[in-house]
Length: 285
Image (cartoon, rainbow, N blue to C red; front, side, top):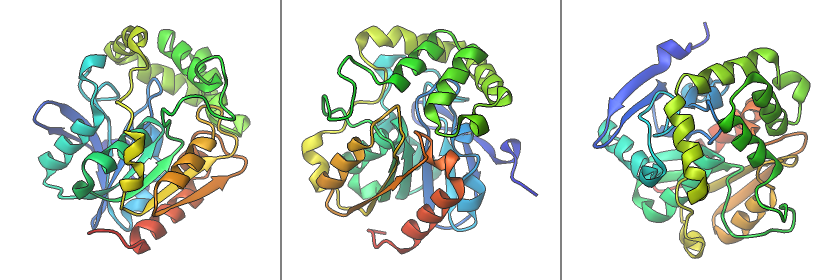
């Protein structure tokens, strides 16, 4: 019988935050960090992965401050690296593998540079890097996907959610279903304070955790797996090529016919990659 959201849901009080998270399995801790879209949660991003990974590891999919069932956060308080460390401390986890999609990947990279003693493996899917214009990035500001994301924050209607999901995925017919778009709209509207804080933070810059110091990337010593969709219209895959060149113990898997959500569109392959990598890549334990 499949693991349900209600069965996996937990709440923890950290030093500063009340955080919702989803837990399953035993063994080496693996923390899953979601992206920044409206209505995004640990469960919505990783519902196709939690149960499979939990057959091998102790899995925690966290709603970060400002998203999902966790506390609201204005942009001036949005430090997801500190929140992740507080989460580990509250649950008594010394160190964990971190798996991050988009914003969650960005958080995981920065955590690896600032708290190397708390991470055993770094796995990212489509993280923004913050290194200025690139070869394949648009020259007029945010990417097509980020523009759609901001529109959906301003108006999280099912129609805008459909536009967003269609850009996030390669296979629109399979994933941009009316049911999913309505569910994402309902999830976003359930926490209007999250929407308001994000939109109000836009004039101050993208309300995301602070970028990692790019000069510190070569100092990342943990084994690193970079997964990126060849057809990502949110964060160009050249970002992961840059990370591959900068992080010494890294490898890159680029998936054709895949957008920004590798863990959703290619769930079975993604799960196999993560299981093998965390089980077998030699890292500081």
